[in-house]
Image (tube, rainbow, N blue to C red; front, side):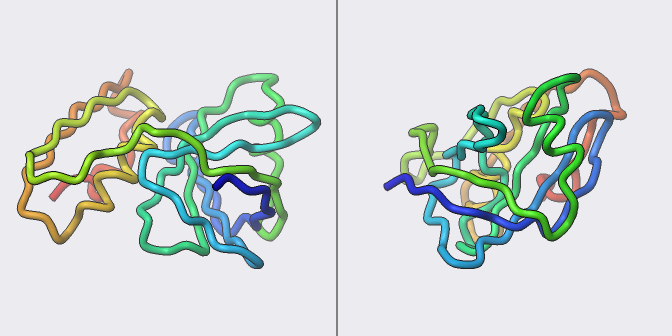
Length: 152
């Protein structure tokens, strides 16, 4: 059931031009989500939605991938947020999840749309006998990140 919570930024890095990786820690709650779901960020009376990019293994942390958009309220917030600062979230939401079965999986993504796919793939690894195939469209080699993380 979706709930409102605060999370503290514990890691921030630029993975590619205008793409941020952000890792948050939830002090007072746990985040119980299904890989493929998303969260709502609340900043300046605005709501923005971000897919959870981390596997389900740790319920106290979650990761986001953010494509920075010039002048965007959430982009400005994420550009300025410092390690140790908090953000207000609500969720999880969504049904872009994988059915449990013994069939091989094919994943398709472009850009930061890799976030929910990364969550799903990492939730399968390393203990799966299934074949997982990823087709990920990016504009250039400079935009590639998570290669080691997704390649097995």
